Amino acid sequence: MSTKEEFAAGRKLYYATFSKFFVFSEDEKRFDGLSKMLDLIKEYSLNDEVSQAVTNIKSKFNEKNPENLITEFDDIFHTPPSPLRNSLSFYDEGYEVGHACANVRKILAKTNIRRDESKFKENEDNVGFVFTLMNEFIGKFDECEEELFKNIINPNIDEFIENLYEHKNSEIYKDVAVLLNEFIAFERVALNSPKPVKIDHKKSDGLSRSESIRREKNRIRKLRTEGTYAK
Image 1 (cartoon, rainbow, N blue to C red):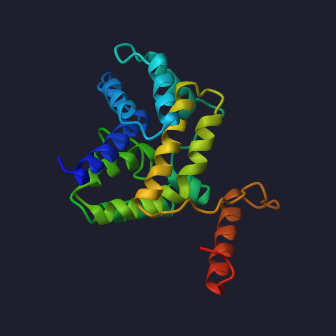
Image 2 (cartoon, rainbow, N blue to C red):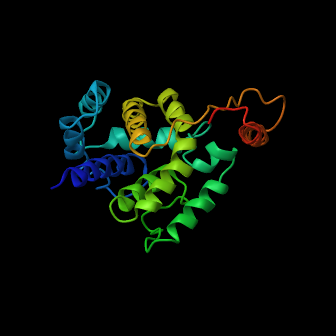
């Protein structure tokens, strides 16, 4: 296997791992193979943070009896009153099924890959589905891979990671958040896609969250157009 192929295989491994962690499924075998995937990630770890995160996850996760991980997933993403949003449209605009979802569908239309609704219950901009797509795109649809990361994942993933890490029910997923954060930093270098400017949603002046985000993004675009804002 060439260095390029090894590099692609390593990235695919990470995305396949995150797909297992974030795709909702009622399949009792949904986590089969995850332990081996984590072992490989640790063996070829990006850094000490990744290695420690994998160690922590493995100490709390039993592939043959994953009930605690299933319960934690449900407590984080499905349990009222504060389920964590896992739609990238929400982190882009403040509501579900927005531009991010539409753009993922446009990217998909350039390929022969389609969402299997029997396996993927959520919309196309769901983080688990997007990670699954990245795993499928790498080595097959290079242009789509870069477009999906640069336009959909990169601008919207940081707040999701932060919220996942800080969620009151995160235990195993706290280390998953660390693992994801380190990998996204690696991907930004690999795909030449710098971390975006953080938008402070708290400074809304009474506006809705989505309107606050929209105005801040427009302000940044205007400054860039005028040449007064560093890209």
